[in-house]
Length: 520
Ligand code: BES
Ligand code: MN
Ligand code: ZN
Image (cartoon, rainbow, N blue to C red):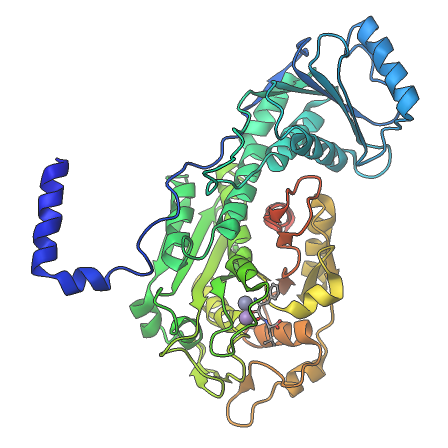
C-alpha cells in the first residue's frame, strides 16, 4: 500500500515537478502531529471518596456539614481558623497531610453575587491550581443539580491547556478523573451532558482556533477544523464560499483584503435550526487568520498576537456549536469572514477603491483597517440571503477599544436599545461584560470619502473604535436590529482569570449562547 503510494507520488513528481512544487506554501512541514492535550474526564457521584485530592467549595469559613469524617473536619476547622480563611470569592487554601487525602483545597465562592457564576469560577480556579496534580480530584460543597453542573463547566474551562507544540519538558497532563459530588448527581450529570458540556466544547474550539499559529490556521484550515467539530450534528447546514464564488457575488472587500496572501479567502456559513420557521439570529465574526497590516504594515513588536485576529469568527462558531450540540430551541446562523491580511505583490494599497457586494464603494486609506472591510461583505451576504431577525457582529476590530476598556469589557455598539440591553444582560449573566459605546452621527460625516462612498479610516485618528463601528454599521440595513462587539482586548488573556487560563480566552461563546437562548 505504502510502496505503491510512494511509486505514484514519484511518478507524478516526475511528470509534473513544477506543479507539485507550486502547491507547497511555506515549508510544507507541519509543526506537530501531537494530539491535543489530554484533560480529566468529568464524572458525578453522590458521595465523595476518602482519598485523592479533595476540593471543597466554601461560601464562608463554615465547613458544609457531613462532607468529611469528624476527625478530618476537626483538622480542617483548625486550619481554617489558623489561616483566617473566610471563603471569600477568589481566595483559596491548599492543605496537605489531613485525613486520608493527598491534598485538600478550599476554594472560596463567597456569599455575595450570583452563586452559580461564583461556583463555576471557584471550580475553574481549582482546576488551574490542580493543573499538575496527579491524583484523582473530587469537587464537593453541598452542591445541588445546577451548582454541580456549573462546577463541571468551570472545571472544564479552567483545565484547558494548549501545549500541543511542546516536545521538550512537557509535563504529562493529569488524566485521572474529576468527580463532582452532588445529592442530585444523576440529574446534574444529565444537565452537564445535555448542555454545559457542549458549551465547554464551544469555548475550547474558539480557544484552539485563536491559539493556533497562522501557519496552521488559515482560512481553509479554519473551515476544516470547524467542520470536524460539528461532525454530523443534527439540524446543521454548512456552506463555504470560495474565491470564484465570492467574485461572482461581487464581494470586493473580503477578496481585496485576502489578495496579498497566498492563502485564499473563505466565507463560512453555519446554520443551526432548532426553532422551526422563526427568523434566525445572525452572528457574523471577523476571521482574519493573520493581520500583518498588509501594505500598511504593523510594527514588529506584538505582531504575533494578530494570529488571534480571527477570535470573533472563532467564538461565533463556538457558540453555534454549543447551541447545536445542546439542541437549543433557537435558529442561528454563524458567519466567519476568513482572510489573511498580508503584504505582497498583489496586496491592496492605500488609495485603492473597492466595491462591496452591496455595490457601495470604499476608498482604502489604510490597509490595516481590514476587519471592517471583511465585515461589510459578510453582513451584506447574511442579510441578503438569510433574512435574519437580528444581527450581532463580533470582531477584534480596533486597538482603540483596548485603550478605552482594556480587557475588563468588550465595547458594545448598537442602534437598537432592546438588542443592546439583551447583549448587556447576557454578558452580565456569563461574566463576559460589555460596555456600551456611542455611535454619534458626526462619525459618519467624518468618514465621507472625496472619491468613493466612504473611506475606511479617518486619518489623524479620532474615536477609533466608534469610527470602526460606524463604518460596519453603514453597510447594515437600518431596519435590522444590529449590535457590534469590539473584542480586541478581551479575546486574549494576558493573565489568567478564574475560568480562563492565560492565552486565548474564547470570549463571547458563553455570551452568544445565552443571548441566542434569551433573544425574543
Ligand atoms: N486587528 C486590529 C485591531 C487589534 C489591535 C486587535 C490590537 C487586537 C489588538 C485591526 O485590524 C487594526 O489593525 N486596527 C487598526 C485600525 C486603524 C488602522 C484605523 C488599529 O486599531 O490600529
Ligand atoms: Mn488591522
Ligand atoms: Zn485586524
